[in-house]
Amino acid sequence: MRTVIIGGGITGLSAAYELVKAGREVTLIDAGAKLGGVIQTDTVEGCVLEGGPDSFLAAKPAANELIKEIGLGGELIGSNDGSRVTYLVKNGRLVPLPDGLMMMVPTKILPVAVSPLLSWPTKIRMGLEYFHRPPAVPKPDRTVADFIREHYGQETVDYLAEPLLSGVYGGSVEKLSVGSVLTRFVELENRYGSLTRGVLESRKRAPKGGTPAPLFQTLKGGLAQLTDELVRRIEGKCTVVAGTAEAVVRGEAGYQIRVNGETVAADAVIMACPAWQAGALLRGVNGRLAGLLEAIEYSSSVTMALGYRRADCGPIPPGFGFLVPSRERKTLVACTFVGAKFPNRVPDTHVVLRCFLGGAGHEAILDEPDEEMIRIVRTEIQALLGWNVEPAFTRIRRWRKSMAQYTVGHAARVEAMREILRELPGLQLAGNAYDGIGIPDCVRTGRAAARSIAAL
Image (cartoon, rainbow, N blue to C red; front, side, top):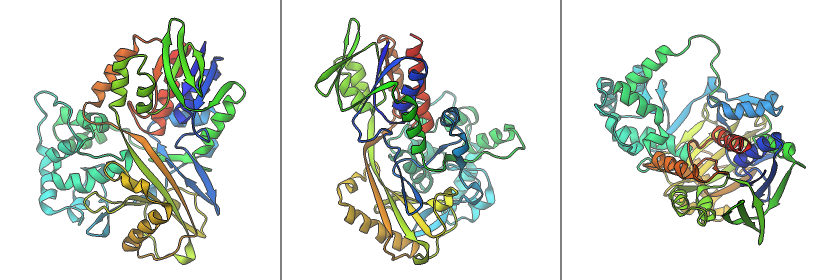
């Protein structure tokens, strides 16, 4: 069987690796200048700079398993969780997140009580949330903002839920689906009523002892180590076509994919590209499936690395970085202190700030020229950190329509797609648009799609 994979990011590469390992004939189509999608790593003056994601959640095993399987286990490193402090901007100042928060759920009284981040009415409401009762029947899907407002109030939405989730999804909490984004919290609500009580009860049942795993993991030389090794593993065993797929057509003997004006025949197809692109390509295969795919919204973002020589910089707050709530936001969404988050990323001679811009409702920044974008960010950094220093180097990456948005009703849309796919043997969807946006989710869905096809 020949399988065509459309998309050469981490999802498509994981699928190609799995199929090549199974001895299948594979053609991989990708329009990028380099395979790897949003995973792009540079090294400048000894500093490891990630143009896309910089790490993945250690609690999700798929990426870790693949990394070890392809011989990169010795390159895995964990985040410096012992020094993990995250700041939020309030009234133009950096305020540390209080200890004991699980996302926006308080599990310790004193740190929240003394924190200047939230007002006393919100703190009292957080305490009273412990007495919420479970709903008589599960509530329908609703926005993250509605869910958190109901439990902890608007200020918690503004200064916890919105900045925390903007940094992950690049989306609006007024549109994101709580059932798809905070699935575990919905389960706790249905069982306990109170999120605080549910989290505390869950922690009581958690295994005790042992060294806690790091929250985040990455590779010593950057995440491109993973995609580069996958490319090496499929090299010579997989046909790579550089170009843009134009259409997918279903015939009696399988599928035909038009690319670069020519047609490639396939028994099976894995759509490892963004959902909006998959929808456009599959319009002639199934109109309803195409409509569902095109209904998945996407946001655009920018990552900017500002590299400084340490001797030129002022003091840097201890911790991983800061988030800027929408109520306080000008342009910056978040900033990571790269050398603090992971070991061996930045030499002692340098400081690197990894800045995030854009996201839902703030995407006009992508159209600014580099020089203006850098000027804007430097002005905001000066206001927050007090630095008025010319960076030694900068790197900017623009990611247009790259982050899927799980809006209200997302789970139902995905289930409807799966129902349609049952009638389209040999066609698979994989990637960050369906049931998880991180690297482990992309690896998991890519390999699962390949295994389904290998089993045909």
